[in-house]
Amino acid sequence: MEKIKFILPVLILLSIAVYCPRDKKYYKDKKDSTKYEDVDPVDAVDVTIDGYEPSADTTYQKLNIWRTYEKRSYSGTVSHGEEVKMLLRRDDLVLIKKSDETNGWIEERFVKEVE
Image (cartoon, rainbow, N blue to C red):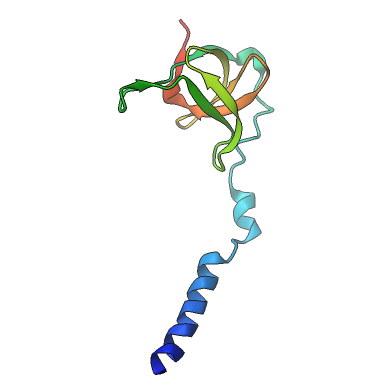
């Protein structure tokens, strides 16, 4: 009985600490990857999607693109070999625009610049 009296408050405190939402300031300070309105479409570069993954020795025919990369909110898909416009690079991510005007983030390793 003594063990239960000790363990129960500890479990309650741990569950509160784990599931407690973060302060709103935390979210305000995070970079918003959806803010790309300042990118001039004239500066867009023609690129091709290359779905080849050397570590798996396979080529993905369809790849997801993400509206916001941090939260992985789905924006659409691109096909292997599809030509798109590269609007912006950030770290190892690339913001692309498809021919149907859909924008989304994809990993840079799947983007090949057209020469």
